Image 1 (cartoon, one colour):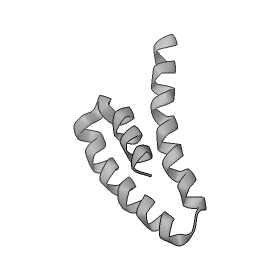
Image 2 (spheres, rainbow, N blue to C red):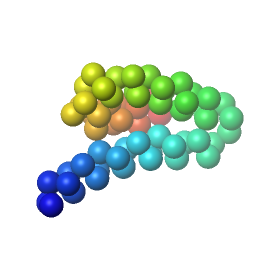
Image 3 (cartoon, one colour):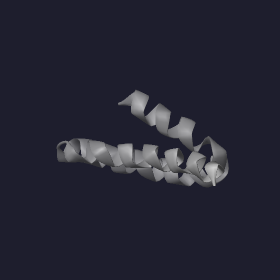
Length: 60
């Protein structure tokens, strides 16, 4: 059971990407573009989903 908790935080960064969407359409368009790229890299990195999201947040 406690191991499942580790999977929960991995989904948190995904929501943070949606947060910027509240900004003007210009920001939302960028968020969508970056989100699409991250989704394609997610299957490849798999466990590296967290660092990938962190990089996106840093770029903002």
